[in-house]
Length: 579
Image (cartoon, rainbow, N blue to C red; front, side, top):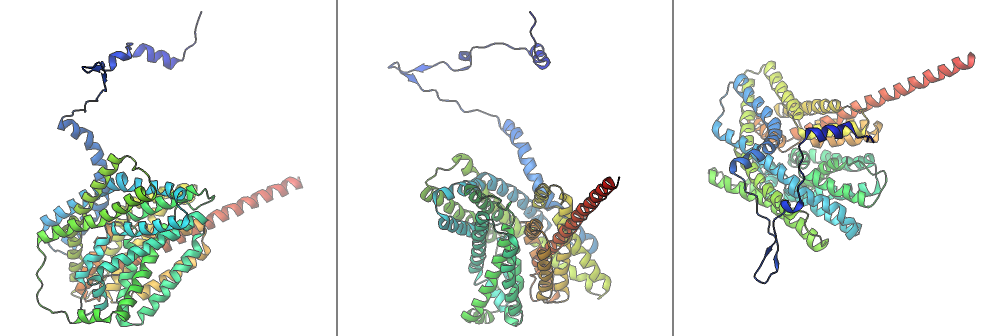
């Protein structure tokens, strides 16, 4: 009697040689002690030759390392070629800079690996567990403290501290005081701003608030305070630092961890139609600006003795810190950035939530790698990126020695290409482009967003360099720029508003921020500018305007297509009724 079988089963049976084995042949024989009791089986550890370990780890490491190479290397090569071919300047300490850039690549690779294996599981576990264990005030308190902790762990936050040594005491005493005597408080204030942003973002996830009112309620006071401080020559110097600090906070630590917490809270509270995750970057950029502005007012009016101490600082020669001291400082900064955050997350997990750590071995591995990566990155930042950016920035004004218009145009074109290329290479932007294309069901194409953001950042960096070259006040760019952005926000759809305002923070990664800061400070020092801040601020506003403009154009295209379709349907119905 025939039996039907699948052709695939037939091929598998005749092509694969099979042999039936008893399960007992695959398991070790039981062992007994002197009393006749069975000894529990202890699995022997797998022994691998170092060459075999290398073959297993090599593809994994190569893929992680290439992600950082694609981001950093084009930017570095562009600066090197520009300095060699256009400026005709040699690179000082080339081997030290090369080693520093290699340390940046290795440090970023290790840090991102540790972030994904160690810190991210903490955020996801907290987000899903907190609402079941604590009431909403307790959840918001944890979100606030987490926002402060992740800010201290941002790789680019050290760039603000490094900038303090490059600011002139005599020209900008308040700015110098904030970056030196008050540097710890400055970073803490930025952290508090991100903490408040985390609280508002969590409430937004839970309540389902729209983003437009939050933008108007936060941006408008910041613009008003900036305009007031611009009228005072002493306070005016703080504007660039404040607006740049908003760009520093939205890096690879803050956004994923706080977003994981907020999304987890929204999912656990079972709110319908909650936002898709956009908005946290915007809020994390605005609140630190307000915090730094208020800190500047506090120091100027409550502690004017700090400024007097600065203005009377002795001009005796201060020796450069040795390489050993810089290495030690990088290690201390790495430990100080990550370890407090780990302790805080551990306390919340064990003492507040009474939860065991998920996969403790993997988690420990991730945390150790994150700390090691941060230390190596800080070393590379000191000896590589910051040094290269400072050299290029200080060499650029040499093309202006004859005062020709071509020299100015060359510098502006250099700045535009730098912004465009750096943004195109940003991995976070490509990931965001895919998310946006899915959320808008293909209306906003992935590469449409990438090029819109890249053009916006390019024009923003170009305007920032123009501000330094011609000694223009930052408020002349900030007020018109945000006025245009707020006007476009009023007419744009909510989904495009979320995308546009968040796209500004996605582009300011751990490589772009210190490089652009060093470039701006080096250029500002050579042309006699008060400071080199403001480039990052304008690089953030550019993509907001460009993406909102593209969003309005897409909405008009969709509306026109719908109107055309409705007209065709109406004409067809009239034709049918007439027939």
